[in-house]
Length: 268
Length: 268
Image 1: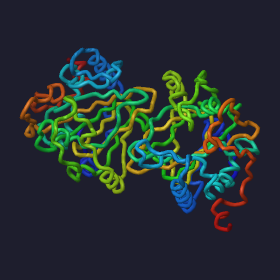
Image 2: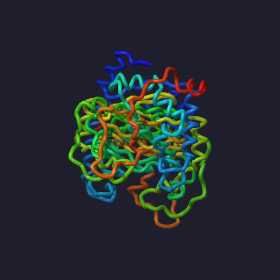
Image 3: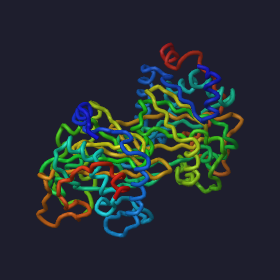
Image 4: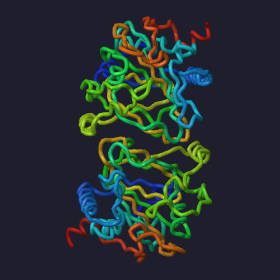
């Protein structure tokens, strides 16, 4: 799948682009099964809910599960990323968040790239994120909310270089915007939360301001987020690097599969 | 304003009914000014945010501010309530919630009448609530979410009769539904959050299951909620009654004004 000129312009204008139902239901089922399998594989890549009862997030499943290894190279995913960023990209981070029913984590507004610059010394915001809906996303189950166009203002909150609170990720509060900054953005361009059926994909900028509401629904909501980085824009650490399930070390440029990841699976 | 047959049927079917832009912008401005005035009137009717910085809720403004005294008798409000409930009604409770920007209280799902039966021995669910939007309500600023039709199942969670945690209101956690009960409702009928411009009014049943999300927006969101009760269905207390700003003592049946509350104000 190649994005057309209108889609490319929209991404650059708004900082995100939704492609509804990019994957079909059979593919979604395969990815869900693969996620379940990865949740049952012990290891540090599993993040449990605070009460320990359920898996809240899984990292780097593309390093263990063939469906996700295929998905990050699927032409419907990788080709648009190459169009939006550059030919030579690799997966810098891969995670699946399972936002539990009746809750989920505290929201806050942030820009991803600021966290990555602080934690991994990423030189430039040369990334594209993809969000793959593993469940239908509605206004009720904690959709990601974007401030359109906010990626074009650079980093709106600078100055923190302290150690991250967590080794897995920065606490979003570390990089929260001021109330005035947010109000100004929203006054100008509003707020948008892309919604759609499972299998939809949202591409979004590492600099766009976004947050997410709790999941009010009685059903969990799974969202896959992969971040592609330009291979000419590698992280570096003066001290201990972040774990390799959080920041992937394989920086070989990815090449698109000839066909969909599922076709590849079946024929393999 | 009289509700037509279709609107009446919809209220009884779904448990709520939205009337968009029932009040005009000038009236909304008057109500906002009246709310602000009431926020600056010291007294126990003011509930502050936890950090004490702002007013989070105000009770019984209709007992102090002429605009609200008029509004609860305005024919666009009182006549539909009489159609939905009975001719002789009074205001049992009146409050305005100012859901602060970037947050607001923890949501949970509940049925109002259960709380009132426990706290005030209200004999029957002979009430109608009105929610008057004092700000535009969007998917982002903590709209009330209803489970359509859930008012027709009676009280889905019974059995708690302990003392309320707060003298002003029950903690919604005291009456939360089980996860299974909620999932079953939502599977059947889905979830709906009425949205619309300031001045819209939502009428809703005391038995409908509802909750509300936090306010993700950078602007506060004010919502007026008044509960009308049948004068033949009065509260009673074996011990100390709840304060009169929480449960209004004036049970004289209300009569609709001849014209809108604002016209009445201006001509008065």
